[in-house]
Length: 257
Image (cartoon, rainbow, N blue to C red; front, side, top):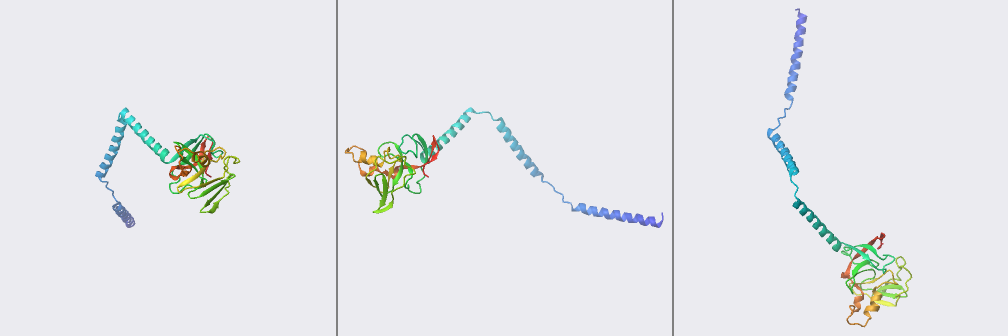
C-alpha cells in the first residue's frame, strides 16, 4: 500500500471517529423519562374503581318500593311548588260576569301577579283582583280613585281632586268603556279614605261597583247589613290580591296596557 492510500484511510478513520463522537454526545443529551410505577398503579386502581362502580349499578336489582317512594317525593315537591305559586305568586281565575266587558269578556280566564304591589302602591286605571268586602267572593274592577282623593261623577263624567285642587278629569275613558254610559251616571261624590281605593267596572251600565254599593248597601236602612259604614264602599289596600295582566282564554289579550 502506497502513501496516498494510507493517508486516505487515515482521513476516513478520522471522519468516522468524529461522527461517532458527535452521535454519542447527541445521545447523551436525550432526556430519559422514568415514569413512577406508583403513579401507574394509582391510575389503574382509579380505573378499576370506576369499572366496579358501573358494574355495581348495572347489577343492582329493581326495587319497586324504592321507586314508588321516589315518585311520591317528586309529586309532593311538585304539589308544594304549585301551591306556593298559585297562592303567593300568580292569580289564575275565571271572570263569570260581564261587568268588565269589553276589556274582559264574560267567562274569560285571566292571569295576574300577586307580587305587583310588593314595592309600590296600586295606580289609577290598574285592573285589580280583590276580596269582595260583602261576601266570600273575589272581584275584578278598575281603580279610579286613589287614597285621599275626591272623585266626582256627574252625567257620566269623572273628575278627581285632592285638597280642593283638580288633579285629573274629565277622564278620557273612551279606550276601555264598553258603550255609552247611561246607568248610574251620577251625581256622586266619593271621598276616598286613606289606604282605600274607589273601583268601577268598565261595563258601567251593568257593573256592581262603588256606585251600586253606595246606592244599595250604604244607603240601605238595615243595621244588620254588612255595609255598615261609608268606608265599606271602598276597597281596602290589604284586600287587593294583585294586578291583572292578560286574558288567555278564549282569547289572548293584554288588559293593562
